[in-house]
Amino acid sequence: MPRESKAAKLERARTVAERMNELYPEALCALHFHDPFTLTIAVLLSAQTTDVAVNKVTPELFGRWPTPAAMAGADPSEIERIIRSIGFYHVKARNCVACAQMICADFGGEVPQTMASLQRLPGVGRKTANIVLNNAFGIVEGIAVDTHVFRIAHKLRFSTATTPDKTEQDLLKLYPRELWGPINHQWVLFGREVCIARRPHCLTCPLADVCPSAQGV
Image (cartoon, rainbow, N blue to C red):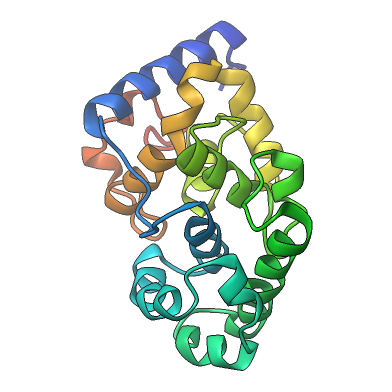
């Protein structure tokens, strides 16, 4: 296929954003949380598992340790017992306690509000930091690239990068800052309902006419 011009790719990106806004005008974070701390822990737990699975374990988890001070003193084995139904629960339990301890020791018991500080927390990478900043503080620093966003970005040929961080940089170049905020939640819903990893609904996809993958290109 001929090389797509930058202008044509930007136009496709705008079209995707417009249609996502029509499909999911009020897309919200699917994880259940009460405040910045519980959101941080919920996103930390969501790596390599589903939001549904996380939402099943967090009521008991946050019921027992609702604050950084409380969780900082928790026994990781007790957290393991509660979250053992989700993937990598050994590491995640340790990260929960270590994250809470650092919040207390280094940030006065409050979840920090900068990308750099959030990424210092155990178990928190750029994706988690983006979600916490956006949903807890209304700060948009970038686009959270999880498995859904990564997959859709590549199917749309908006990126050929091999890592989430590099894929994010490709998306940031395509979309103006005012559109960064809703992309993660909208694309996650789209990935669950339409662009499903193992069986994408390309024939009925509302983006089929602007998606090279759906057109077999």
